[in-house]
Image 1 (cartoon, rainbow, N blue to C red):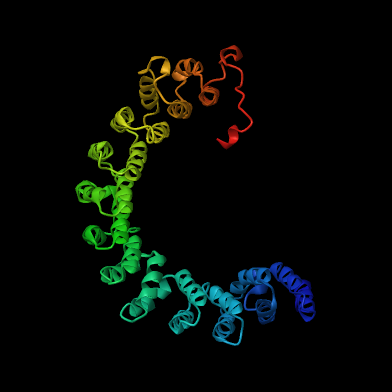
Image 2 (cartoon, one colour):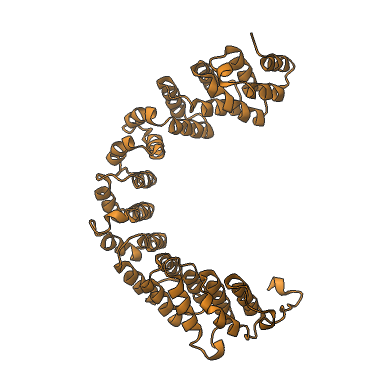
Length: 409
């Protein structure tokens, strides 16, 4: 006997009131939904005749009906007389079913290459199916459809994909090689690092960059594989993006010599500012005392355009917050009454000291309130408010007033 809600759904469907049909079906229990032919018929009507919001809602219900939904969905997907949007939803829903006939049908749909978006959705469904699709995708690696197979295997992220991906790591297509390296980099498997090391000199910059990222995530192998020595040449790669990824990647390695390597790159007059910015960020991430010292040294010798970045990086360090604040205060005190520093640098130093949380720097911040630049004063007051609530009102100057057009400066 149909429940009251199911009867209401049937009545609403007779009147084409699809939103009510969806609302009624959403109230049914899993037991009521399981293999319910009546619900399936109603759901398919919504899928074909409802608007996109109703289709999204019904797509969440159909998988709960079980395997009885597979064949009707396959028919929808393969019906070229239907709107593509209906077929897209059918393919998307099929991703919830891990049966061999679904994999076969989705592969056939991809091979037809009828519509790019339909192909993309079918590929996504196969990715969602996961392990049951691996064998079929592996078989496709030797066919003209290897690109789709590689893309799907790369997204499944299961250890069973490692061997087939290794087999095609030298694919002629650099985009596919990049996908393969990115996928393999997510696994900790002894077969992978030796293959990745070879890809550091790949002719394609995207592959080299992906390889740098993948290897930099294997800090556990830093000593065993001497990753610093392998990655260091990529700091001088012909492609700037590879250089930047290398600088950031080295920051992940637990090797104390990384700081010296990055400091040399930062100090070189031949290093482009874009790369220096990545090096500054990397040293800030490392955050050891030697890393902070390297940033301070760069700050003392660097042009004004990178000084704010350096101070910001120091201010975000987590490992040596007290030491970082002390070094910034010492740098600030190098110039008499702080007048020798540009306003933007003093602003960033104030902000950094506030972030670092060392209450002992409040005295230095209060002295900086004498600065003639109102924006510096605002940054200083914000920093002080973060560090302590003990500072008296008398210690703080009046809130600076800006000209009406200051917001456009």
